[in-house]
Amino acid sequence: MSSESVIDAPATEIRASRRRFRRWGILRSTTATVGLAIILIWVVLAVLAPVISPYPPNEQDYLAMADPTPSWGHWLGTDNLGRDILSRLLWGARTVLTVAPLSVTVAMIVGITMGLLAGYCGPIVDAVISRISDIVLSFPIIVLYVILIANLGPSILNIIVATTVASAPGIGRIVRGLVLELRTQEYVAAAKLRGESALYIMLVELLPNCRGPLIVDAALRIGYTTITIGLLGFIGLGLPPPNPDWGGMAKDATAMISVWPHMAMFPCLAIVSLVLGFNLLADGLKDLADR
Amino acid sequence: MARFIGKRLAIMLITLVAASFLVFAVSEFTPGSVARKTLGPYANQEQVDILSQRLRSNDPLLIRYTRWLGIILGLEADPLQDKSLGLGFTDPRGARYFGNLGYSTLYKLPVNDVIWDRLSATGLLAGLSFALIVPLSLVVGVASGVRIGSKLDRGLSATSIVLTSIPEFASGVFLTAFFVVLLGWLPGTSPLSTTGGWSVASQMVLPVAVLVLYDFGYVARMIRASVAEVVRRPYVRTATLKGLSRRKVIMRHVLRNAMIAPFTVLLLQVNFLLSGVVVTELVFAYPGFGRMLLEASLFGDISVIEAATLVTLTIAILCQLIGDLGYMVLNPRIRIS
Image (cartoon, rainbow over the protein chains, first blue to last red):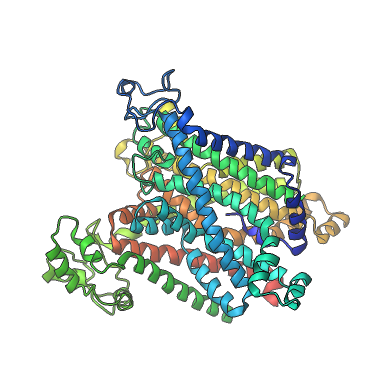
């Protein structure tokens, strides 16, 4: 998304951001603290879901089906099949909070590898990797997701694969830009003179110095991947039912929105709050780095 | 300049071929899949095998891809239209012509009869949204960019973070719940036909609103960042010290230079904006290009998927080219060197 500005950051700013991150003063930014708090609340809720959720996520309460709106028995109401929405949201949080960070981690590993190779291993490797990235980035993101998932079939593994294909080139570009700037630094020359291998230089000298922009980018990307997972669920390519999946819940409920708007609103609110948490965290971290 | 454009066009063509090959490979990787998807799930294996043989689907992928390109360029006849197959696929334009994108198994029409109407409907939606996003974000972005840290600026930052956290399908749900279900002011779907008793204009309101809401904060923030950077440049200080009014400084010296980055980034981000259109179309049952692509993918209509991705790729890559060229035209430093 708005990662472009990170790429353009000159070396001095990169170094400054590195110093700031070293102190880990997240709490000095209100924005980042609020974001982190929202995320942590969801993490706690997800971890405790088996204990605190009032009903099993797929249990049908046939009596509630007559009036599925929020009540004392079902705080957020039930869906059209009489399943408790609060319980399903709590269980759904477990899915999204594992799949989104996991996808971004895999994408980061692939993207960082691409970026380090492109930035450090000379013009030929760079040209090959950059062209491949250009091709992937020329696809409208959603088209890429739809084609991949529609052909591979919806599953957690395939969602991770699709996210990696879609985001690794962007991450690679960021790392490549940083490495091209960092490789002329004296400590890299010193490491070369010491006779360190290219692998050592990439992983020990270059990579740690890229982490500032990468941390911001990761927070943004987890938020965006949360949207993507919700979106895939919403267009019917999410996790197969009856897994509680926020996007899928919203999709099933939109058909009934004119009668029971709450069924669609609560899953959407859950997605929005979690994404907001990650976006606030990313924004606060970036602020701290620029300060 | 001409050499630059020529080089870019060549790269664009290569990217287009490579990307379309990828789509082709993913959709047609398994040899029998075209025949199976054309005949549907109820055809028996024998029928599928016969059609596969007629379509020469067992040839290597690269050969099948070149054949597909040949059909588009009008060098080969579309094998699906062969009368002896008895599929009933006939294109009034004939089986062999330039721009033949194949036959849709989902809509039972030539792809050319399906996609262009959809594309213009999407163009209408995207155009209307853009016509609102650009002036809105320009005003807000410039106003907060020249005064970083002001109330307006902080308000914009907060609003835009919240807005970019609401995916299009969620804001679609919220807006529908409020304006359609609660107030009953607007229609919940936008089929662009007036049979439901709602005017086409009223059907456009919610889809356009969803797109504007999601993208406005993002674009405004980009303009803000760019303006904030230009305002700090020495020539702006010189202009102020020369005694020009604040208005003139902003209009003549800041704006022109501050627009370069957002203009380019916007065109480079067209992929990101296109994705939003697809979702919006789905939420409001809007008869557009994105929804068609989605339906085709879910159904397995390979001709439409391949044709539609080819068209979106062309649009996206063209926009990126225009972005690059525009950057050169707007920025004299790059144009001359």
